[in-house]
Image 1: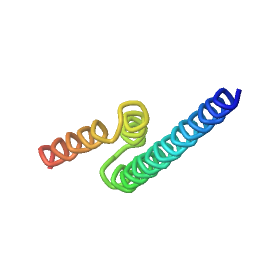
Image 2: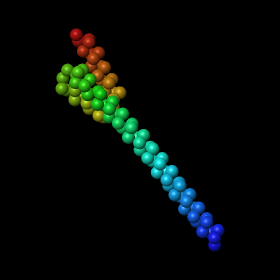
Image 3: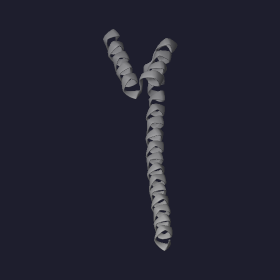
Image 4: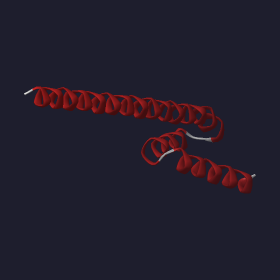
Length: 91
């Protein structure tokens, strides 16, 4: 009987230890994801002034913002570079 009680206690302790470890892992992953999200938002916000400077028309600005929202920062930068190239060719 005493052996069974000890095994039950050890099992509960190992279950609690496992649950605590999983909670710590989730907290760690959550912190990592929050940091990635903040970095992502910051990089998108940094593009807003560039969009305003580079785009000549409101149609271009809307297109740049649409690309930024739906396709991401890299694609938006690509679009802005193409606008700059076209503007240089036109001048």
